Structure formats: structure tokens, C-alpha cells
Image 1: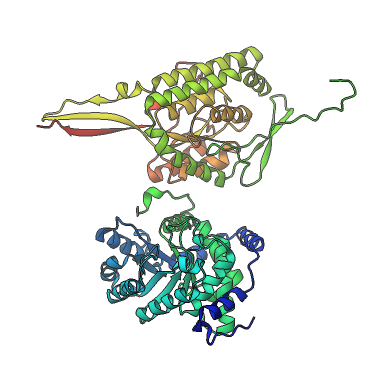
Image 2 (image 1 turned 135 degrees about the vertical axis):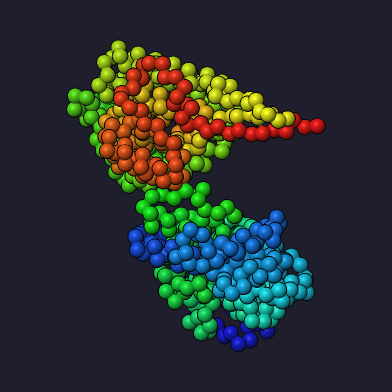
Length: 312
Length: 290
């Protein structure tokens, strides 16, 4: 496949020709492969390494209308020291909050090395004007966000107006400045794996640094096959353009087993070049406690209980 | 049926575990042969692993808010329903007890006693609070009330008495609102699996009682050390060394431990001890208002 990428954004037709020229996804094959990789057994020392890697990849997230400054501070404390009783637990990758909470998070995480990510662009629906989306992005970046998680306009994407989606992503990317841009495809609303592949390509072409599955507000969210399709897309994109893009499954990852399945998927699809918090993230909050419980189980030999970890 | 009909293949029951209201095989895929008291093969029972125990504990934990939040009246009704269902399967239980080595007359008395025991505990559901709770006199303008609350998830190592003993350790745990993970007696676990079928058809929410069959010595220590188990009943642990090890492991998160000394006569009046052991008392000060 050697699509010409030079003037791809010149018109809707050019974009459409490119995206619809991508090879189709074998749905049954993708489901089957993801299910097969999900049966891999990761035990003992490999499991311990996988758990620590997964903790380092977590984007600890709180995106609720009921978020308070206190809750954000508590989450930041947890991000830096996930298990207060065990300093050997690594820090998570980032804390993900709404734009108005960014300054609080920046304050709480100063000097810790944990990054601050903010959703923007009328998250989670993305239903607003481009001016509002750009302004919200600029606001979050101005408040100190290191990473911006934007949502694409699924309505425009599904109606075939790819150029609008492209230009929005490009405009938000410009507003990000040095901040990393993660593009949320909301795969639960895209209906087919073909659309997921197209949306991933669109996001990468428009300049996204990461492609992210979901907002976490729509079911299904980060399923294994959807993540597989996106990983294949970033692999192909790297081989064609030479630019490496990260992947972030988000939503629905609740257990250590889910997280480890994701890591296996990454290793088998794109190789260990992506097994790093710079290139692969897990958007979740409840998974962290399960990872900590499994970690404690490995350390102490007894099953851990949720009563001994923070509520969030 | 005419004489020319081919011989029909018997459909035999697979004895499985009971976790979260479902009947899964052991995650480990293991089973072990169960024999009658005369040594004849009866069936293969699932041999639960520590992961089955862990799954059972999470099922019990999930079921706890609903079951402990149900009204005592409702819990009593459901226990009574369990007794009804058990009565309806009387012949089956008698046959299984006879297989396990109980005399036929004795087996009949055992099933009757198990049904009566359930009804007896069912009656306690809305009375235990009045017996062990109190309105305390205090030197101030307050109401001061102590009420018993269920401890949480209770691990129960059931005794080898396959029906009456099992019912006598499970009923007092759940009637007050606890949920439990039961390790059935190792030698004769089949009536326990059949009891699970009774529980599953009695409106008892899935996960309130989870029944594991297999090696007590293998599973009990994992339950005793599990940090999400709040109490453990070691009645069925006959090996003194294992019992001490379990008690030590249980101390890690201050589990309540019930470890009866000497044998228990299951036909005797059980008293309230098995209920009160798994209750915690909450005392609240209420201002009397203006």
C-alpha cells in the first residue's frame, strides 16, 4: 500500500479516496486474534514486570461532573505514590482531568515527573464550534497541561465529511503548541472496524501524537480487537511515513488481566518499541487498585483486599 | 416403551462448584473421585483451586451489599424457602446420605433435622437484633443504641457431616446478612453440591453462598490469609496443625475466628453462638433534638 500522502488534505475527495482505499479489516479474524492473544498466560516474574509496566502506563483519570479540587489533589497524590505503604511501586504516567482542574493538578504534581493530561474540545460529545474547541485547548495548555485528549467530531466522520475532522484535529494540534495531542476516536460510536482504521489514519495524518480508543462514557469502550486494529494502524503508519504514533486504550479496563492482555497485544502487534509509557497508555482509574492488589499478592503470597487501598 | 427400544444411556450429573449463583467447573480443570463408605465409586467432584476460592470471595463480596441490606424479614423468608426446597428433595438427599454411609433411618432423621434447622434459623432473622442489640442508658440527653451488623464475607470450612452439619454452619452465617464461601467436607461433598441446587432455586441471590469442593488442606489456608475475608469458621478443620496455621494467617487482617474445640453434636440445640460470632456491634449516639 503506497498512498500518496502529500496533498491528501487538499479535498474531501482526496481524503476519502485514501481512507476508503485502506485495506478492509477482517472482523472475525481481528476478534479471533485478539481472543487468542488474550489466552496467553503471564506468570511469576513476567507478571511482576508486566504489573509494574502497566502501572507506569496508567493515565489516572477522573472525568466526572462531581470532581472537586480535593478529589483531584487526592488523585495526584495517588499518582505519585500509588501505594502509600510501598515506595517501590512506580509512579503512573499521567493524571487526566477536565480543563478547569488542570491548574490544581499542575500544582499538586509539580516536580513529580507525573504529567498532566486534560480532555478538551467539548469532551465527551465534541458537539461545539471549532472556535470553542480551540479556545478550550488553549485554556488547558495555558493552565499547564502537558497532554491534550481531544475528541473527534463523530457526526462529521460518520457522514463522510473527513476534511472537517482533519481540519479540526490540525487546528487543535496547532493550539496545543508543545503539548502532546491524543485523539479520541470513540470507537464505540464508529460501528465498524473499517471505520476505526480510517479514523486512526485520519487522526495520524492530521498530526495526532496518540490515538485513543474512547472517552470512557460510551460502551463498548476499549475492547481488545479495537485496540488491535489501532495498533496495526500505527504500525503501518510508521512504516509508510516514518512517524511513530502512540496508542491509548481507555475505558472498560478494570482488572490486571485486562491490562496484561493489552500488553501482550502490543508486544505481538507492534513489538516492544511500544511497550513504554511514551508510546502506550492505559486510560483508567479502577484498574490501578487491581494492579496494586495483584502486586501485593505477588509480594506477600496472600490475596489482597480492596479495603486496604484508597477509594477513588 | 416396547422391548425393541435401544438401551437408553443414563444422563449422569456432573458435580461442580457453586460460585456467584452459577455452577462452574474448577478453573484448574481438576476433579477427584468420591467413593461411598464401602469404597464404591460414586462420582467425580470438582477439586477447587485457590483461584476458585478467590473467585468465590469476590462473588461473596459483590453479593454482600444487597444481602446485608435486605430486610431481616426478607432474609428469613428466603431461608424458609430454602427449607421448603430441601423438603421437596427429601428422597434425593436421603439417597445421597445413604451413599455417603449413613443408615437409611438415620439419613431420614438427618434431612428432617436439616429442614428444621433452617426453619429455626429463619425465625431468628428478625429477632437476633432484639436479643443482642440494646438501647443503652447514658448520662446525657441522647439516645444510645447498639445494633448488631453482619461482619462481611465469612469463610466456612464445613464439617464432614454432609448435610445437617453443613446446613448448621451455613444458615447462622447468612441469616444475619453475611455472605460466605463454604469449603464442603472433603470425603462426602456430593450432598453439598445438591444443596447448592436447592439454594440456587430458593430466591437466595447468587453469591450469598458459594460452595467449593476439594481439598480442605489446600483451600482453607488461602481463605484464612485472604485480606478480603472478614471472618473464618474452622469447624471442619480436624487437623490441629492446619487449624493453628489458619488462625495465624487469619490474624493478619484481624479476622474473626470460630474454632470449636471438641466434637459438635449437630442434633443438639445450636444456641445463638454461631450467629453472634459473625456479628459486630455498632453503637450510635442520637441527639434527641430540640
